[in-house]
Image (spheres, rainbow, N blue to C red):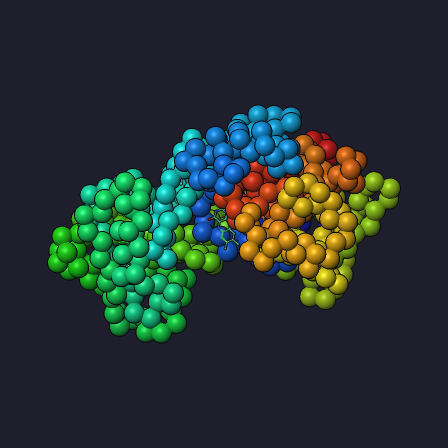
Length: 440
Ligand SMILES: Cc1cc2nc3c(=O)[nH]c(=O)nc-3n(C[C@H](O)[C@H](O)[C@H](O)COP(=O)(O)OP(=O)(O)OC[C@H]3O[C@@H](n4cnc5c(N)ncnc54)[C@H](O)[C@@H]3O)c2cc1C
């Protein structure tokens, strides 16, 4: 049996931040996780707020957050702001995340005052706030007047460097950035399989000294041929990304950077590994392969959570529980008999506008339009919380020692507004403090 002060269910970004903060407050913390969720599928960059409430893109995350709080009282940022300045919470929470990441070899650039536009592997752009420093050379504002070479590899599935290069040239001009030149080239390297190669496999190859040496020479030849100032690669490696960037920059004398890539992206794997190492360093135990399948309660107190590991069930007891199981990708929300259900505690669910779902069937939730302008209606569904991140129904706390963090919370759609990791980080941070105060 597991016994601890705080049990965190879910080891995505929200659960890891909650655990880190609770451990910082001096309590014993255990994380249980059944596998992986959206955090591993992400691009590994931290969006805080990329849009204004009407949907217009904003280069000021804090302006986006301020307008969101004014317009959407049910939004998680608004809920946090009822007790503290949400800007302060986001700053503290992202600092906690970025500090843990940088201690474990994943450094970030960017700041909360400004969104940047990064190039991605489908030839368009991604707006975000904090980005891994291996991507810095590819922020759009740094590319004015650049002669860019996009480099692909024979066999790498889902990445066409020439197509990307023409996309960048076309779209950059819309932001008043003129690329002097943008070309694409596909390299054939004998060590690489020439079909169905994944980004992760390529990253592992780039981590190898011999492969990197061959790549550096090829890139130098291409750079000289094309008088290139900037080189965009689909990845710079899984573990030796800084070493690769340094060596390739020295060899080519060009600004080498990596593009924002598709799921499961290499930068996300790096970030999650760094955060797990950071959390473990704070004394948190992380148990993978443990799924919460039920619970026992007395009145408004959760007494234990039932865990399943390899088909065996056993209880985990804690003073406080943090539920950070994510939405549909994580497994926090599931479909049962055509209805959406919270998977562990069967908590009541709400939609993006704060209305109770009351067991409505999924086809009814989707009936409004086959092409909903405001994004997929199910993406805004989840649990309603108060300022301490306790689940509430009609203003009443459901369980006094249960706290909720991350994308399981209702009232926002990260897909539409570009706020995924920002909300996960801020709500995880607040849930961690609240749970530690509760047991303290
Ligand atoms: C393809 C994609 C790309 C994205 N890109 C970005 C991006 O670039 N920037 C950004 O800011 N946001 C991005 N997002 C959004 C962002 O990834 C999410 O908002 C964020 O990761 C949510 O974190 P979370 O911890 O709440 O949930 P998750 O990461 O889903 O974590 C939930 C965890 O709970 C575990 N779990 C679930 N049920 C149980 C159970 N019963 N018992 C034990 N464990 C359980 C799961 O295994 C999982 O590890 C992206 C999302 C997707 C899908």
